[in-house]
Length: 155
Image (cartoon, rainbow, N blue to C red; front, side, top):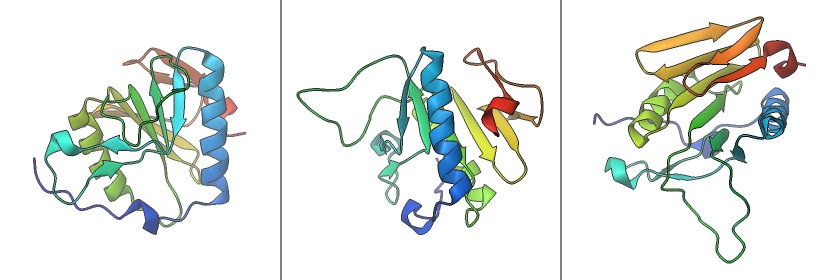
């Protein structure tokens, strides 16, 4: 795999819209009842054998249903999520997010969403060769059979 240089997550400042959409999308996915929803969960990248990137933290990720781990906790998930969602922050560039998508797919993620708050656009990537953008109607993720009205997302 080619070396991918990414801006450190600590260097990217969140914003009002970023935070709002992260919380709101988490709530929407939780209400679907079909997934366990996590925010800022560390994903272990050691399987990719990268020297400079030890973990990735997507804004939101979805797993099959599961509950709280009562006895132990995990600092990094080795199991890939089904879906990750990255929400563009004002100081974030799209190139870095697309580079992260490449890594997510290499880990085994099935679908990646790019949410652009300013433009009110959601782009869904089932892989790196295809994407579909939504600005109205329903957001449809065919890979995971998810449908959400875009009007419920950008409220």
